[in-house]
Length: 369
Image: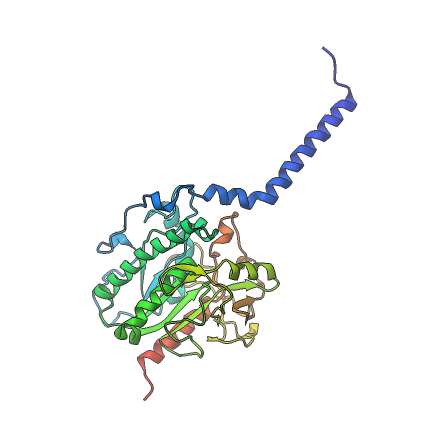
């Protein structure tokens, strides 16, 4: 058998390394496209059979529900919080996640609930419905199928909110909180609240976190000052210097039309609430006013995280909240490609939101003479 010369072996090794490098570079450049394609259910929504609907008459229909939701005592907090969790289901097999999907439940319990419902747990009783979340893929494309999946998810949220109002609210003040995809769903609920004078009078505030919301068509007034009740605080944030990311965020944003369809923002101004200042304003918020970020991931549900004050400054510019990079290493995004496109596992404005909600509740509870 003929032997391969040392020079030939070296060339073969170099060629093999070159091929591997090309594959690696190519995979890196197109990794996002590959993951996005893998998350596509590859079935028209019109022929898609969604998972079974949650039952909001049963405790199993709720991810968070007070022990005795229909009982009010002297120890019961004065307000309620209707919390809509963000999309945590990647996609791939379904346009909409089964209610109670194990991975989604774990992410909610360990990450989303402690970081984003946590700021409100000392303000009111938390009600969080399980719903058939539109997949992360539906947020990454503007296809009509994806819009239908998001509209379908709203049907569950609307039913759960009506169940909460009719069965558990009992005329109490309440706070609406929606995060990212949940925020889009929460934005739709604003119209239902605004149309009911009794509900409108009991709304402490609506916090639509990381949500692009048109400023010119709000059914309720924006929060323009601290302590104002019955208003909307909505914002979507980018880190300073992410010019391309800011443009993409606004260009890809879908908002509700008067007919109940999801349409492009199309150059309309977005509402921008600054959580540090507690107002819709373009004034700068210096880091010395920042009350505290928190990374509550993995903490027990009712545990109070350590606050990290003066971590960021923030300013509203062209409808987006521009935030400086946080100083702490615990306030950095982690995980894979899909994880980095979800709500991060920390809350930059945890302490600010807690104080803000308390002040607005006090204002509603003690009306001006």
